[in-house]
Length: 175
Image (tube, rainbow, N blue to C red; front, side):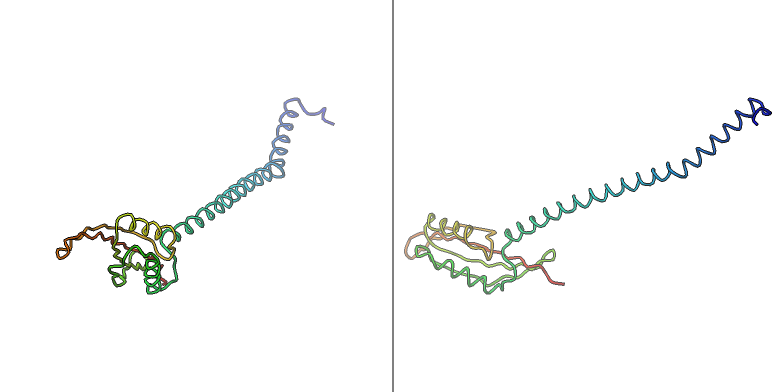
């Protein structure tokens, strides 16, 4: 049946059949395999993104908890915090509360800032102990500034040591 064709015609027909089979196999299997491979790569990238996002979420959650601990408790009225500062400082008999200022309100970067100032009198070691106890055990507000002052009383000719302590609370402004 193929004897009537020359080798050149048979070779040309074979190349045409080979090209047709190549296109058919590309259409049926190679392109499907390539599409599935691309889909697998995209899915792996999404899975990678999800696992990294999950770990990022845990990191952000722990950072938020750390910042909440650093800036003081939220949801407590400033008057309650001031009363708690007074109650906490009155536990120590060896120091004297010289002054407590009114609450100062400020707003910055989406936060309400409440500041309380307390002035204590006593000797340096006692004041340092009280300040240490405030930093360690007082959770409602955080100390942001401590200033020691030596004040001379000219009537008694004695020096008094005072420590001015500023406490701050941050509350997120609710929009």
